Length: 325
Image (cartoon, rainbow, N blue to C red; front, side, top):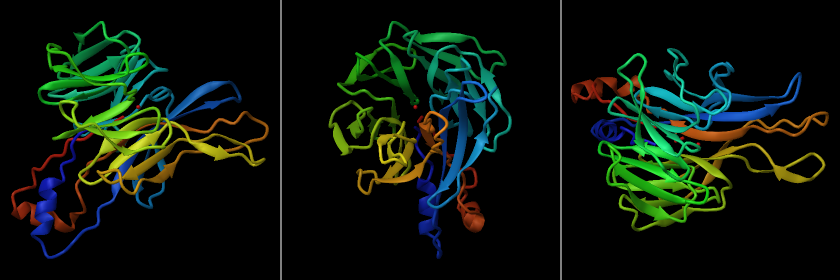
């Protein structure tokens, strides 16, 4: 849910005599139910480069991931809240340098200005933790909220969605003052604030866009299922669906594995690009993997133009990224 730092890269490439075709490395979270040897919830953090890349698991250790509600990439790290473990977990994109924050009931996270922001749906509050401290205490930014879920924090504002009976998108100042409603009638499990727009998904299958003040709400895509994750790059929207309709060997249609879709910034060309694990075992209850959220890793493009960037004084370029669940 963060803005991707491709603008200067695009400028640099336009000044060169060659072109590069970029692929987007995606990260997503999955959960499924395992029935043998004992019933348990199983979670994982996975990755693939699209288009065309094979998927692989980054994290399967059940002490670090069990019930991830989503996944974010911001500040050079991956973050996910885990409902089963009652904590927020963070690591580098290569799967190293784990950090854990024990926060019961965490539903979504974001990082801004060295601060970790966390929504807690059941507690009705938003917490903030100072990441410069080894054992940061949690300060309450907002309380008394109605089912706060997704969160996105900018340099001067906290944006969050409220689900259930509230169904709205809100914003406040960083200290929690000046809270206001931007949108009503939207059940959004994830959204992203960019430089000029709010992109949001809804649990009834819509991808929408609004101005930062909530005006100009526009439908970009529809009919995509129970959407729970979104990440936006300079040219592509990625959204995740909890599950999708599948056909069992006997011909019966049922809810199957989660999916990830991509589309243009105007919603055009929406297409399924990834489907989670879906194994049918006639001896076991059907339990396909559900996709809980999606994020794009903003990594430097291929080194073929590294010298060009150095010549333009852009080697210090930093990208700030995030979705999630």
